[in-house]
Structure formats: C-alpha cells, structure tokens
Image 1 (cartoon, one colour):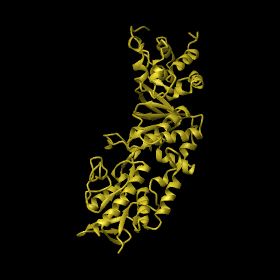
Image 2 (cartoon, one colour):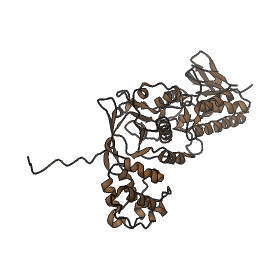
Image 3 (spheres, rainbow over the protein chains, first blue to last red):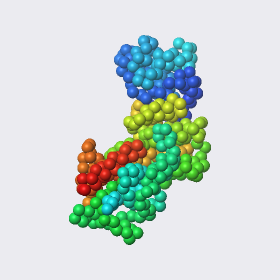
Image 4 (cartoon, rainbow over the protein chains, first blue to last red):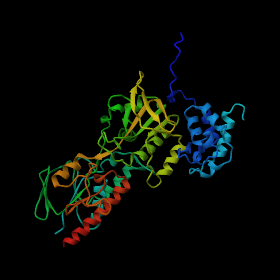
Length: 110
Length: 339
C-alpha cells in the first residue's frame, strides 16, 4: 500500500554487520592506516576539500564503519597532490594509502 | 629521643615514604587498615607502559620499608590535637604521641554500579578494570570463562569527568590503563575485536603515546570517539552497546561478549575520615586540600601534617612515588627545623 510516505532508513551504524574483509586487505598493504587518530590535518590542508568535501580522515573512518560507497565517492575528488602526506603528524603516507584504497575498493581500479 | 612519624596508609605512597625515612635514620610507624601492604597496586597485575609486574614494585617497596613499625588491620579511632603535637588512638588500643603525620590514605575505585546505564552488577558480561586485573592475576572469572571473546569493549571515563556522579575530575590513569588492558586482551585472544569508547585520549605521560600507537598499529584496537550512552543485554547473554560515533556523527551499535568499565578514582572514605578527625580541609573535588596546589601539594595547611599520593587527587604510580620521596624529605627538614 502506498501511503505517499515511507519510513526513512536508520542512519545508525551496526558494527556487528560491518564486513571488514577489504579493510583487512588494505591493512595488510598499508599497516599505518590503523595509526590515524582523526586529527583532521589532512582535511584542513586538502585543496580539494573546500569545493568537494574530500577528506582522508573521513575516508579512513567510513571504510572502518562499512560505508564503502561513500568513501569511494569522496575519493574520486582527490587530485593526488600529496599535501596531506606532508602534514600527517602520525607519518602516514596518505598519498600511497589513497592509491591502495583505489586498488582495493574501486572495482574498475579507476 | 627519636621523633615519632606516623604514616597513615600502607599503600605505595606510605611504603615509599617509610623506606626513604628509614634511609634517613628514622623509624616511622605505618598504620594500615587492611591485612596487606601495597594498597591498590598490590591487587594489580602489570603496570603501564612497560608491563612491569606490580608484584615486583610492591615487593621492592615493602623490603625497603621493612624497618618500620607496621600495624596491619588497624584503623585510627581518633586524633586529638595537643599543644604542639597529636595524640593518635589506634583501634588496637595503642596510642601514639607524634608531631608529624603523613597522610597516604589514597583513593577508592569509583563504584561502577552507580552508573546504572552501564549495567554493572545487572548484566552478567559487564566487569570493571579492577575485575579484569583480578582475572589477569588469578585466571578465575566466570564472565571471561563463559564467553567466546570475539568482541570486547572498554568504556573510558566511568565515574570520571561526570558531574552527575559528583566527580568532575579526570582520573588520569584510565585512558592508559584501558590501552594496557586492551593490549593484554589482544595478546590472549588475538582474534578478538577490541573497541575502546573514549571522549578524549589523554596520553600525557612518558611513553603513553607510543603505547597508544602500539595499540592501534600492532594490535588493531578500534577507538570510537563517543561516550557509551546505554548498555542492554541480548537474549544469549551478550551485551549491546550504544554510543554516538562522534567522528562520523552517527549512532553506533555493537554486540560484545565482554564489556570492561574503566572505573575512575575518587577520594577514599579513609581520607575523608582522617580529614575529619585531624580537622584537615577537603577541596572542591572531594580530595584533601593542599596548602598550595602548585608549590606545596604535599603539605596540608596544618603544621606537621603532610600528604603523599592520591589522597590529594588522582595520580599515577611514578607520580605517587615521587611525592612520597618529596614528602619524606619535607618531613626530615621539618624535624630539623624543630631541633
């Protein structure tokens, strides 16, 4: 029956149902991905962030919360300039990390 | 005549101060209410950040303090202020006249059951940091034996930074203790998913940040920024934890086999009792009030009464030991000034 409206899906993250298979693969290739402490340095320095919302912090977080589609959509805005790698206080090679994410998560590899 | 020095509390602060005073030629008197020395640290298994066995630390302190007069299972019945000294009556009937009291009465662990929303004492699979240390020491705990240990959670700031629980202060050691215990769980159960629910991670001490990076990179412990709002029980006895993942701005839910509450430090009843008997002021945070919080943390406003350790606020083991040494020297200088 069509009421003309429907219940919106829950935005809650259920960690019991998150499949981290690909993230484990990413972690093998990039052990430093676990070191992110969500400080936001990468996002604030990112030249693409102000018009596209690109944020490596958000990408890493989304991948761990099973929000792979959102993460991949964000990643498409990256210009691979590498500024985030220069500012990361934990020394994560974010540029290399982004390339690994592309390889593992983007089905066509692009 | 040798000066009487009364140390109230035989935890690590009292023991370290006694050891130092013994080295300076005094014979202090330690009054301990329980049947063992070493206080809370004696009940711990390993200490951050180097995983030092707590037993070794306490054992060393006890052997250095062994020249003292030690009264176990003894409490203070009352303290009378005389003209220039104190008369302390003990529960075993002995009375001591002294000009110097060193208060090392320490802290109590926050009663986790008071945070009802976390279900301690209600749900089977909820325990505290102290229960977990007890399991590390004895290997006996039905909460651990009864579950598959696939997923374990740690809740930071239980009874700390919590005005409703009347403890606005940070307990200082819980962040790093959670990381230590999370690593120990991962070492014993490498397949377990381990989550830490935190508000801030306060890694202020030597090598704490290294320990944190270690937990992230080498043990894959998941840190979720958000205070647990409620815990409920599943039909199969596991616990469901709800929090907000404040970094992604979304509610998060996870089912766990075991939930460990990082209960904080509050002023012990003994500290408050001694403060009442000796007429010592209590600070706004519930701990004993020092003469000055910057320059004289180990001195009470009363002449001849000194503090060391967590009776004046949450402290780590090295901080407590440093204060105990400082207090011993302060006592020594005070006695010299009386001569």
